[in-house]
Figure 1 (cartoon, rainbow, N blue to C red):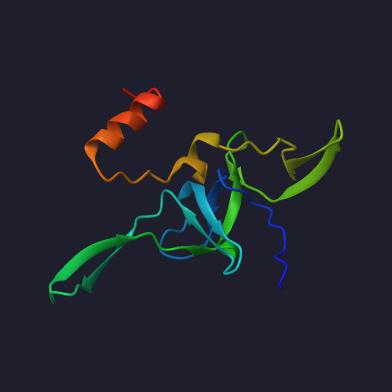
Figure 2: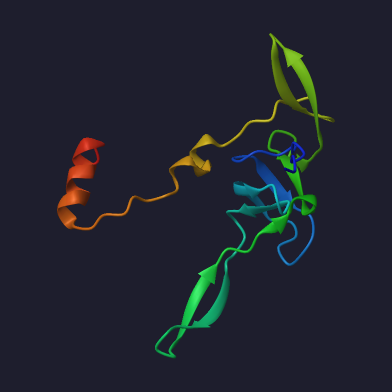
Length: 137
């Protein structure tokens, strides 16, 4: 079983894209694939592909293409520039800092992937019950 190397970036971090067609865009990381060393950034436009279904009809689909981890750099909002990070131990906690500005790395928790999946319902009654249980009337 292969162990994966720990990464300097986490889901919810702001990054700037360094290479490719989307060079210079700043966005938030939505997901990371450690096996392929790729990630998905929210500001990257999805690719449109056409695919044939079982009835021989072509459908246009939007697919979010991943970016290699080496093609992004963490974005420091306070210094308004991309920067590498270092680690410090403060109050028995490992904290990430930017190397040049010494600011702490903050993540956008609202963009984290934990709540991106939508539940599947077989009927409208199940959906209504789910919304009532979770306070989303």
